[in-house]
Length: 124
Image 1 (cartoon, one colour):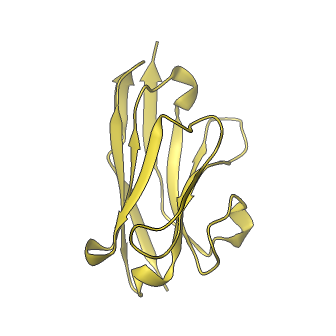
Image 2 (image 1 turned 120 degrees about the horizontal axis):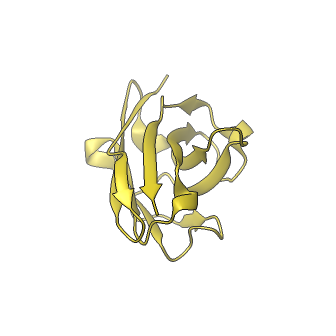
């Protein structure tokens, strides 16, 4: 079992930056691929990006964030990050991290554990 807690959300002006963290506990963090998803009010949850289980592994991004967001992980600290730059109002959402025993995927159904989310609001 894995417990995930996101932090780092807040209010930022368009064009600004935020760094979100996801702290994991309860199991071997390094065994899991980690994904980031987001959900805006009235919309479906959508894939943001993911990173493979090993340190320095492969990353994958949705087209909407590619070039602006960077996902990394520190297995020694059981933490995954997403650095979000050049934020846009359409990035406003609750951001969730998730853990999967499978290789990185954009499919939310393949993630076994989810955090409670952290709110990101980008003003215009």
